[in-house]
Length: 99
Image 1 (cartoon, rainbow, N blue to C red):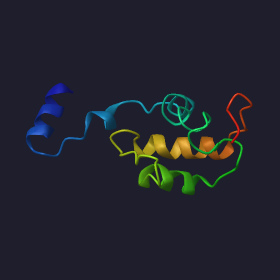
Image 2: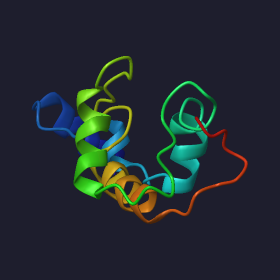
Image 3: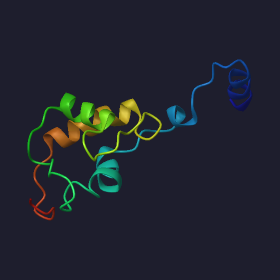
Image 4: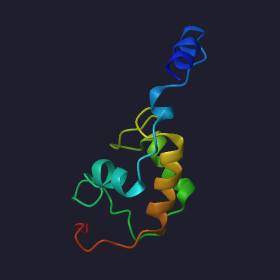
């Protein structure tokens, strides 16, 4: 497999290392990336609001206002899809601070 990756890299056709890794669970991404601001009086609470998954994905990639835009190298497309659906369906967490 290593030879295949090296050969593909030399030809310019190799995939990034992050594309080869197992996607992180959406709960983990939220806890380590999103929850730092959303739920701590920094950004709006997003869990429990039933926001459309497509809207969430668009906001994550575009980074509206003070929110940074997250590139596919930071949150892969597969992770973003799972995260968007998870946040859209998530119940409100009483531990998160209301605004």
